[in-house]
Each structure stands twice: as structure tokens, then as C-alpha cells.
Length: 72
Image 1 (cartoon, rainbow, N blue to C red):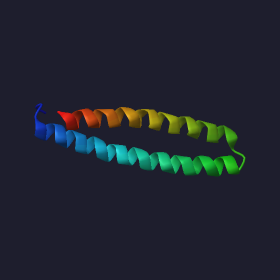
Image 2: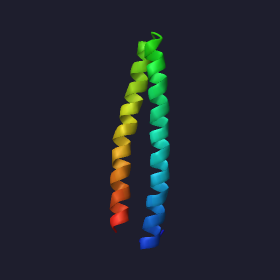
Image 3: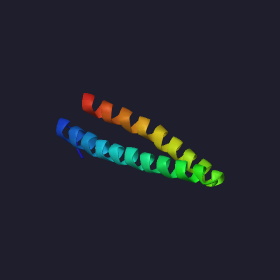
């Protein structure tokens, strides 16, 4: 895809949708983590918490990429 304003906008829009999906997945994992923790499945809850941390870290990188594309 050529480096043009239109392609940058399309890429940023696609990344924004992926970021929304990532936030939705994070919210779902958070609910599951709470349920697991409340029901005594701490080991699995800990693993789910690590997954949420990964989603948060990657969301920051995706947000930075979106902002950079929108500034071009």
C-alpha cells in the first residue's frame, strides 16, 4: 500500500477497530478473571490477569501507531 494520506487514514481506521476489539476482549477477560477469583480458581485468574496486562501493553503501542498515522 503506498504511503499516502488516504492509505494512512485507512490503516489508522483499521487499527482503531482492532483497538476497540482489544478493549472488548480485555473487558471480557476482566469479568472472567473476577469470576474465577471469586470462585477460588486463583491460578487461572492469575493467568488471565497476565493476559490483560499484555492487552494493555499492546493497546498502548497500537494507540501510538494510530496517532502517528493520523499525524502524517
